[in-house]
Image (cartoon, rainbow, N blue to C red; front, side):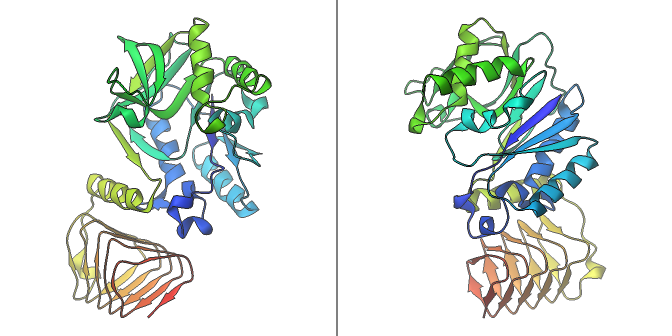
Length: 331
């Protein structure tokens, strides 16, 4: 089975951090977003992923190196394709057209999700991952009878279904999906935003009699904006909460949930709740609440909250909310 991951977006809503790091490579409690997505499939899918196909934008070779190493951790081969111009979700998938054969899963690297039980993809041409939501008008939704999906509706004006499509799709035969996307491209069939939408290809498969089933997720977390990244990090930190050895940190108090990388140094500070501090970061005489602090950063004599601090940054005598990118200095 192949995992197809379109991730060519610029991640503008996560600036300044996405200026230097592609959004799927940003960390959530010590692990990259993309790493957590792959882990979830390894844990919940009823078969092995043999190859991971990344559809990238203008990312450097260092990103390919990191992703290749990540695939190696899961025993999977890595492949890379490029999307030069954003023309919709179907077009993004089609950038890896020669990989659209056999069993494939398409997943968009915008969100994290979790399923408590194993997901089986037997006896279906396609499986769509869904999540029950309070306001289905914001999403594409699936209409179903039992486990079988009978229709898709984009942002319904009437409450016909509360099961939102989260952006994860299994296809028994990737070549069927490829053929329907080709139809959209060749006949200029566009949808929302005048772009080629994957839901239009799904609708054509459904009308062709293909059997669509659903897999309902227990948790669906967004990482697409600064606020969402902060909120999701807090949720994951609470879920994966580990005890902190107070003896390692002189004069410190902690309010859980907190994640601290093993080689971070903290003294005379209060940390938490909802704080993640990554590797080689130093915090002295400070208070940090509801914030993400990335690697190799120094924070001194500061009181910050609801903040995101980039790699190799320096913050001294700061108060309030900060969102600063890599190598920034705030005094």
